[in-house]
Image (cartoon, rainbow, N blue to C red; front, side, top):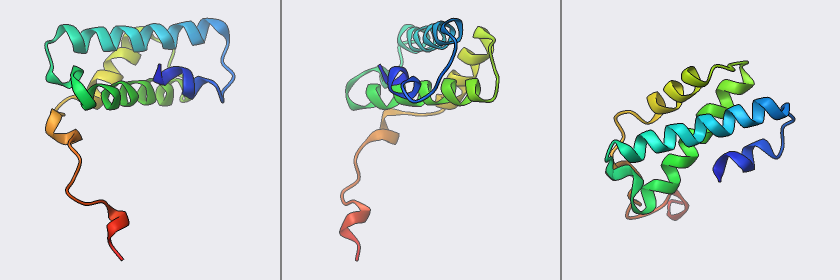
Amino acid sequence: MPLAKLLADRAFELDTTDLLTNAFQESWEIVKLGGSSLVEGDAAATVREVLARRIFEMALQGERDLERLVDGALDEISGLTPRDFKPTAFSTADID
């Protein structure tokens, strides 16, 4: 789970860790239930990471409301399409 990696380097109280985990799980379920094509293939892992990072960032700023955490995470991915996650023909490492 992407959130577990982020939480490994930070100390949150158990209640807060549970809250963040619940916010991540709820936001992911909403994305899946919405029928988004972002839950398939390579995009899914990236979307899960974006959700987790946003929830984590909000928690670092002191947010502890489940609904606001979920809404903030979903706002972060609004407007994204699978096309946003397709690899490019070349990477910046190919540029001298």
